[in-house]
Image (cartoon, rainbow, N blue to C red; front, side):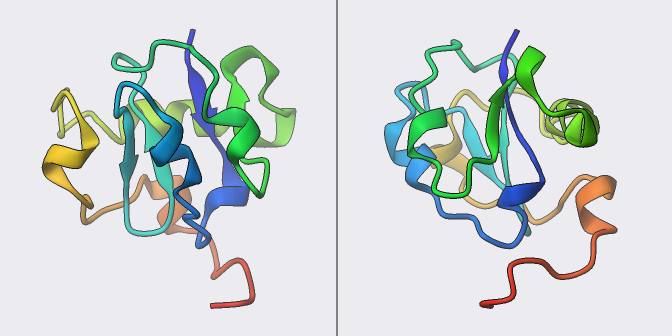
Length: 108
């Protein structure tokens, strides 16, 4: 099991979760953040600090955002397991589910 970042994060990218993550497993894409499923230790530190409530335990992800589990996993298909987001910085891509969305958030 792992934590999942879902649609409320798209075009928000608050990053409070990154500061809380003790294992540096939250990576930045172009339009949202992604949790690396193999690096996440299920501590849950990220969930309460997200200001838009975009982070869910895998089994608790709302039905309308179930595809975001796949998006978080597949985002790393060609990235592998770098062992820490701070080492590689922003990754210049998004999962196709995210890339296909219209602009979100309104305040950008």
